[in-house]
Image (cartoon, rainbow, N blue to C red):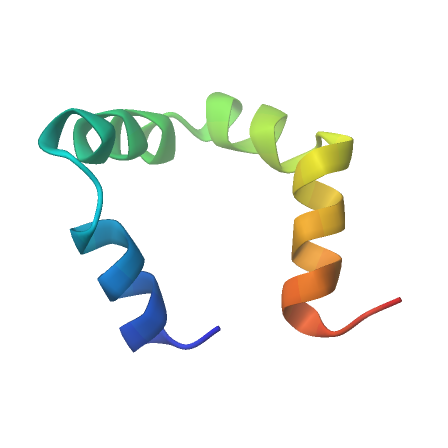
Length: 51
């Protein structure tokens, strides 16, 4: 996924969803908790082409 794809995805979110994303990314602990979930790990594997 390239930067343009991420920007398009972000732009497609509602203002409330964008605010939530910003809040999560601003909080290192929340971001880490989310990235450590099995769902996030699976998504990251798919996005990077890992199996």
